[in-house]
Length: 290
Figure 1 (tube, one colour):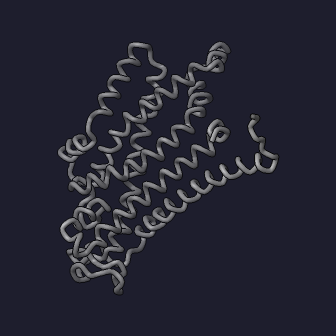
Figure 2 (spheres, rainbow, N blue to C red; figure 1 turned 135 degrees about the vertical axis):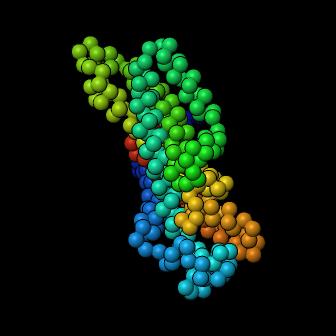
Figure 3 (tube, helix red, strand yellow; figure 1 turned 180 degrees about the horizontal axis):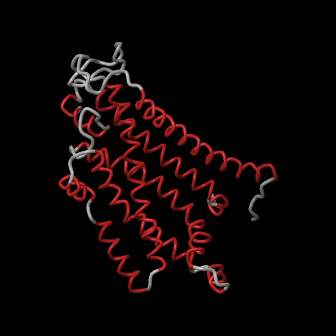
């Protein structure tokens, strides 16, 4: 029995449908992240109330002006806290990724070019750093500095450095094994020019997707640290700190716990969709096979 063949319109429709799904994921991710970004930027210039204003009354339910989302147990406006929390989430994600990329990518490139024994040593050290708990590292940073957003970002960025360095090392070694690298070296091209002209352009696609995914993980890590009291201190509280503050009143006033939790999920899902869309649009092999 022969397999049924697809007509030309049907064959053209299948790739178009896959492209539509990929575009939908990318657009959805851009919209979700864009909304959170817009709210975070707006909080820099305007919020409904001051974050330290406690004149709203304790645990007011949502739906009543001038506090449309209600107030927390101290009488602070929840909408204001959520807007500031969006800014803190974006700052923590961007700051952690920046630290991880600045430290991890050059380290990974250097390890990719290192000799066999030095490469093995660097790989072993990276594995040890990856296994080191981020929470313990955050406690060490807080002990050396203080409980603040900066301490949390430094701790998360240092933990992210090992992950990005290991990924970069693997990608660099894969590129260096290609024939065009051998041809470039034979023609007398220097190593710096090989790195800038061949290695970095060929690994940037995978690195950019990994950085986007690490951004979402950094946001979750900062929320976890803030929940434990190791993040941004009051009155500028992150979503994690809001969840910790609302823990005792979750049954009587659930908005204070539900709203920051939903926003955390929305931001992480949006970043993951954005990363998936970027991977599909920038990887021709993946575009052909999916």
